[in-house]
Amino acid sequence: MERENMNQIVSRMQKLVGHLESALVRVENKTYGICRETGNIISKERLLAVPHATLSIEAKKIQK
Image 1 (tube, one colour):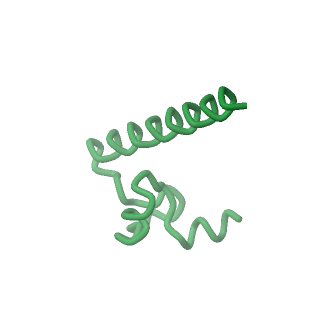
Image 2: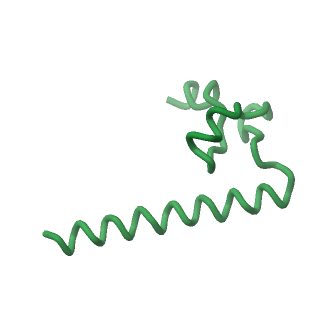
């Protein structure tokens, strides 16, 4: 059971690292903080909560 929990943690961490690496690429491309659906600026509050966000809150609500 403990091994399974550790595997889940490692998997989540690897996924997060991938998201953060993608965010760094967007910083280099000067597209960080721009919603990929609407093209609008993603709010500072959202980026502080989810630094790798690619959707604004409005676009996320539409997606659901």
